[in-house]
Image 1 (tube, rainbow, N blue to C red):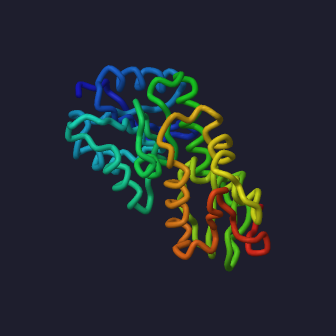
Image 2: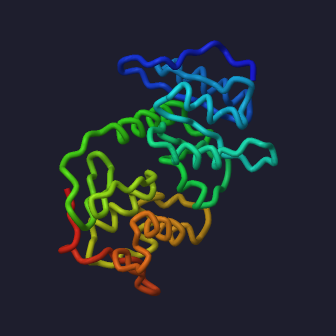
Length: 242
């Protein structure tokens, strides 16, 4: 790829970012900006492709910034993200999107942003993602039920940590805040996408489906569908909110 010399060796309070973008000009732009705000940045050696996974494992960055492309090239950021999520220790995953993406693709990442967003916003998203992943627990997990930890943005089910993307957590937290009450699809769209959503019309259903799968809610006893209205989280007595 013809990248500038970089270092991703560990350092106190220095955020290490691995930027994998299929277009060199955008990759270099991201490289320069993130370095200008004090982050330690690396680009793939030899361009994006199959070797990116090995390089991420070798360099152990805090966050992997991956472009999601619709091109027919061999670069597949979604497959790379899935491979990373299968690791016991992995970086935070932030997708950069240039157009509409399917909900099942976005759910693989911890967060996502449009690649044309303001550079300062992107840097902030990286830092927030990192702080969310490194935040300490505010309380031990309960023996059963659902535990939601807003400050560290973590969720546990029956004492097991559930890995959620930023959007998935936002939806779950909204349902948890209104547990025992029906939350309409419109309310979810307004709360999570802030009135400016222009993507797939069934994105809420897709995210609810993913939440149920991750929460082992195959019988839909935790997140219930109220036909024609919205969704209802199980009764407050079975939930723990901290």
